[in-house]
Picture (tube, rainbow over the protein chains, first blue to last red):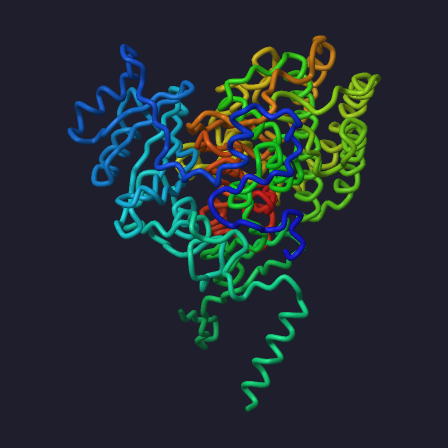
Amino acid sequence: MADDPKPPETPKPPAAPAAKPAAPAAKPPAAAGEAHVPKAAPATGPAEPPPPAGTEPPAYISSLRAAIPGGVTATSLYLGDWTIIVPATHLIAVARYLRDSRDARFDYLSDLTATDWPPRTEARFDVIYCLYSTRHRHRVRVKVRVSETDPLASVTGIWPAANWLEREIYDMFGVNFTGHPDRRRILMPEDWQGFPQRKDYPLEGPGELLMENPIDWLKLRQAKEEAEIE
Amino acid sequence: MQAETVRGAMFDTDELVINMGPQHPSTHGVLRGVLRLDGEKVVDCDVVIGYLHRGIEKLSENRNWTQIILLTDRMDYVAAATSNVGYCETVEKLLQLEVPRRARYVRTILCELQRIASHCLWVGTHAMDIGAMTVFLYAFRERELILDLFEEFCGARLTYNSMRIGGLPQDIPPGWDKKVLEFCSIMDTKIDEYETLLTHNRIWLERTKGIGIISGEEATGLGLCGPALRGSGVARDVRKDEPYSAYDEMQFDVPVGTEGDTYDRYLVRMEEFRQSLRIIRQATEGIPEGPIVGKVPRLIKPAAGETYHAIESPKGELGYFIVSDGKSTNPYRFRVRPPSFCNLQGLRRLVRGHLVADVVALIGSIDIVLGEVDR
């Protein structure tokens, strides 16, 4: 752990280390400009390009809009994948519809993950449900925006696969899932404080206990023991 | 609970909580299972993971797109080339980059060789856990042949770093394809060897038939993937449903089980050996000429956007969800959907009502790699 091949010079917003294998001598102007400008402000939100005008959304999206009013805030089409953005309040209804309706039949929860967009203060997390239908063999992504304090309903009742996946999101991001049968940390130890995958969590871990040199640990421990004896 | 014996004396029986601790020869890595037993029957099993969590997703946010290929090796270290391919294909999808046909063929050959290597390790360790130790030695002998092929190609035996965004780092050495075909002919007879030892072996049948039965619907709901799902009768294979690399040009079958027990999952994987050999032969005999890497920009910086792309690793559906913010040379969010993680979720449901010895058989049957579970 102490011998990181990359010395952790800047922990936060993605640092662009100059020493890259792909750093050529003749840089294109944009890259040269970026090397001098201090790190650009982090992106304020995901790029969700709307479908180009005139594209027909798949049948289940139109029927979803009709069946659940207010269920679909927006849709996006990028690289052939459809994404449906759903308000957190309608998540369970939309999820159940997508699983059960005849032209959707999304019975397989491929992945459930989250992304942190700190500049978007009113709802910093994007929780993404990647769904797949074994019957119709199509995919869709459902996206919900949620903030750190707002609870989000758990979909374990609809897809039991969500159990561990939601535990991981809780562990890494701190999103509150209500109705989850087993809400505890999964990858980090149970008593860990902090949510590692958030953008404001340092890469090297909790600061004051981290020391580069084991000799420093020993000195600190010795000092603590001496303090205790006194 | 109290039980009356013949003589009328009462015995207090309680549930015993046993720790199948992270250090255990049969848990295939650092996996902890807290078993609640009623006698020898498992009432419940709480699976605890995280002992091999290295923060690969967080590290990737601080690495540029090519450096992450090294990290993907180390997740499923048994089948590293497939993790590499999955990642490279996702980034190529984000970049909308065309991979030359020759590179796609070589990637297919490497993925299928990796599938055979991973299944060799699976059959060896699964059989050894159940007690058939000879299979372990035989399977690793063949795995060595595959590792030799990989070493000749990219210099490494376990963590290959053998893919680049847009293709491969170098072309296959001359004569390599002949060695692959020789390997295929050797492997055919060896698969028969493994089957002779196990498939109709009475002890094997008793240990694996009827253990861990799960229906197709339940398996789909639980998110199982790969042979664990196919053993229950669900014909789901990413290579057929959403072909990638050169799989759309290959002829192969996807074996599907019927009962959903450990024996069926075993049969599915044994048949996958043979189908992989079929694919390798087709791909090797038909490798087209051409460049080995596509037209990749000097600085890899996909436009802002996000995508999910899945491939079929030996363990199941390996998916990558990558978000690019279009500004920096690192991904904004790098998420791996590990098949072993999703399969391991099913362990709690599978072991209920079985004996402690069956827990070991089921962990082997699901085929997990803790590096991938914990990342």
